Image: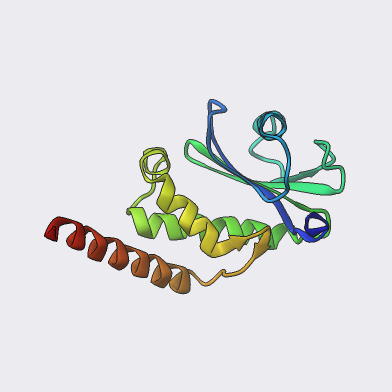
Length: 162
């Protein structure tokens, strides 16, 4: 029932070689299906010219969906969304996510996604929850991350006091 109302079906970050760096699916499906779909989506995106638009339709078994992506340096940020979603709105959402990560990691790179995957997931969860966009204000997202950082440093302090 819930899957009928998800705006965002998947958020994928995949490097130029096709290695997934973050796969977040907002629809329930077997792991093997997630892997196959993420590779199919990546193959569809990577073969496109840099001069064409950043969205395509009807590529996967999600026939009612669009794939919207941005390519930054060595990473593809790919969202699979409901067919009624605004392409420009989703491109803006990708930009908010990337800029927020850039502020958190000071010039984010692929290694940040590998070594700080918990923080990357937290940032994403501040923006999208259950396939629905919940926050797009970078300052609000950064405030939540600051709160997490403070909580973690307090917990580390308590752990070393014993």
